Length: 270
Image 1 (tube, rainbow, N blue to C red):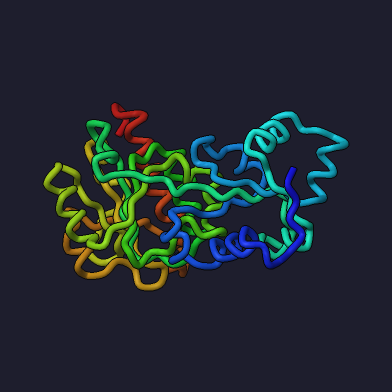
Image 2 (cartoon, one colour):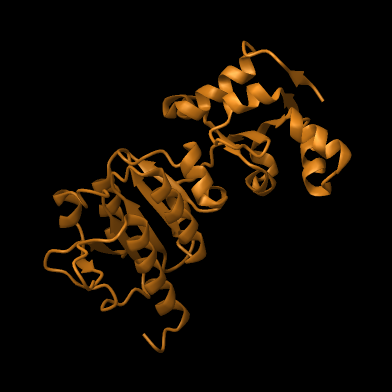
């Protein structure tokens, strides 16, 4: 394997740029994944370049892990000195694999391959952990696609990617410069929009989500904007006991997605 020992190497500098700058990720149409599990889950065609820490390479030389070793060799992984790997990695205790990966590319029509899609629209969410958890839950609940406003955090940021648990490669998603325009298009397609909102709303388990449906989830602190809320066909809320006023955005989205999933799995009981 090729080995890099200089911090001035362009590949090391680029890893750091992709880790730190959303603008650079967008410019290169690529991002960095970190960790063994997500590397093994990464589609072959998406992999651009792979880096392995010197210590992991040495360990694999003594105790080969067939699946990992095979994939590293297939993509001609480059060895990074441990000090350089630590500089490029985002975690405090990196597992030893970094992968430059092509950003998934989806089109609006890809959201409508099923007759009755279940969709999410995320407006101005800022916590990468929330975004990643929503993607992971969306895959599990059978969501057809996720639309993100331009003010929403980049799902290809390191923390968000880790939180998706590889769902970033499998869940269809699209960023939009005009959320209202896209939501109006959804309505024209027969998709009913449900806004997570506390004001004049009905309990989340009251509506029927078995037809084409979309949940609108707003910013962690401010919720949905008035413009987006006004587009909803119905406002829904999650009833709560005690003195809690709201739930975490990812938790709320998960509850809504799984209610729709429950109704679709057991339509006669809904």
